[in-house]
Structures are given as C-alpha cells and as structure tokens.
Amino acid sequence: MDRFVNHLWGDMTQKTPSGRLSTATVSLVLESPGRLAHRSLPVHEPAPGHCLVAVEHVGLCGTDLGFYTGTSSYLHTGRKSYPFVLGHEWSGEIVLTGEGVTGLREGDRVSGHNFRRCGSCAVCAAGGTFHCPYRTEMGVVGEEPGAASEYLSVPAETVHRIPDGVDNRAAALLEPCSASVHALRRLAISGADSVAILGAGTLGLAAAQLAVSRGASVTVLDPNPRLASLAAELGTDRVAAPDEVRSGNYDVVVEASGASEAVRQAIRLCGQNARLAQLGTPHGPVDAVPVDEAVGKNLVTHNVLSGADHWPQLLEEVASGNLRLEPMIDRAFSFHEADKAFERLNDSGRDRPKVLLNIR
Image (tube, rainbow, N blue to C red; front, side):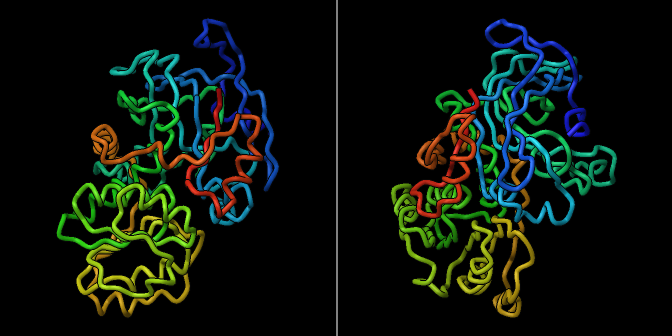
C-alpha cells in the first residue's frame, strides 16, 4: 500500500470549495477482487499544467466491473494491479489550477478523458498523441489514481468545460460517449445507410442516437428487452434480440458490447462492401471469428480506440441534442454505497445502462 499511497500524491494543504483547508482526500480503493475500501490519502497539489478538481460524479462501466470481479484482461497481462483508486469516467468542478494553465479557471464545471501520453515516442513526436503505444490510462492502465476520489489532479490538456444545459451528473457519461463519436466519424454514416448496432449499453445507445441524427435506419440488438425498449425510446427504427437477426445485409454494423458472440455476429450482419466498427472491447481473444466471410464481403473494418481526440465534436453533439445523456442513467449511489453500485452494475436485467457514484 505504501507504494500506492506515495505515487503521485503530495502532502500539500489545499483549499476546498467551501473555503476550508483540507490536507486529505477520501478515495475509493479496490484492494483485491470484490474488496473495496475508502482510504484517506494526501491531497495532490496540482503540478504545472494541471488542475485540481472536486469530483462530483463517477460513472462505472464494464471495465470497472472486470476489475471488481478480477476477470479483467488488464490484470492478467500485468497492465494493472491492486490496490488502486477506481474510475475513469467523471465530472466535477475546478478548485485550483497549477502554474501555466490557461483557458480554465476555478469554478469551471469540467469533465475529461483518461489518456496520458508519454510525449517522447515516435508516435507522439509525429502528432499521434492519442495513439501513443506507451500511454497510461487513468484508473485503467498504469499507476495513476483513478477518479473515484473527492479530489483529482488532472492535466489541463485533458479537461473540457461541460456545456451549458448539461448537468454534472449527465456529464459523467461524456468519456464513454466520446468513443461512440469516434466510431461514427470513422464510419461516415449518412441517411442512405441501414445500420445495425449490437449492444444497448452506453456505447451502443450513444452510437444509435448519433446514427439516427444522421438520418440512417437503425436496428439495435440486445438480449435485454428493457434496454432494447430504451433504444426504441431514443429513436431507433427497430429493436430485437440478437437471436432474432442471425444475419443481414446492413451497410454499417457497430459492435458495441465486446461480447464474443456479438463480435462474430457483427460480420454476419454485414452486407457486401459494408463498414464495420469494433467499438466494444472484448476481455480477451475471440475464437471462431469468421474472417473468411469478412474477406468475402470486402468489409472495411475500424477498430475504435477511445475517443480522447474527439471531444470537441462530442460536446457539439450533446449541445445540439443529437446525443442525450440523461436517459441512459440507471441509478446513482452514494460514495459509501460502492458495493451496492457494483451489484447493480452486474445486474443484467436493469433497464438503463449507466450506474453512477455520487462522490459529493
């Protein structure tokens, strides 16, 4: 635990939004599979180019659930190890800015992405900083503490103001939805396209809304009829269980669940010369993928890594109403009900995908 506590944490006294001075922050630490603890840790002074944020809400996703259950491939490959502070989807308010920060100030409502580039490799030098092979990802890969903490220090270059009209609770969904924006941009969907989306989680429902906004005919496939019903509420033309549509002739297919069978089915749903986006992240290798069929159909396949470089467009989509965040929220639990939040996240019968923690 000493290694964890000392990493990136200072001993500086900080000023809270209420004006009181605090020397500590309470953080949610995942110590081992299924074992959560709230730990008091020193507040991290914002380094030059960083902001100190009072976190208000943290979103939980399948990646967090994999850490909680101990099944995550990141654990098995050594890219992540216990103990660590959870969380990479967040919203909050800036309380302090470090030296050199411009364009952001105390009191700004913000959210941001979790990619941290190395800044020195050939990819970074060529300008591809969001695809740095040596990157870390706050709360996911590497040792940087996650967002499930009363206070969080983040690089200012990763932070964006929350649009007016979007509350802080809904803004906790911005980070995952940025990946859906990335996928839709790569796919160049138009009103002439028929689109199939596998998975009605946050990624799938965000992709569905964006495709609908572009005039496409959209089918959403999910085994949970409650989530399928939500997809219909959000404007899709058709919802169905995956076994009802075994194959198809769609112009565009988005695999948004990461489930092995969905990865295989995505290729079967594609028509000739279709575009396919692998948006969901499987927890490991997927067997029996019909690559021969993909080749025979001459598919254009996009593997979508995050959406860290697509936030300007993301914020435009949200501000315009093309992407509605609030309807995707299932329940919000208090900071000290984290175990209940994970129980809810593991409930496949819920009717909305996103589970939140209210940090304040």
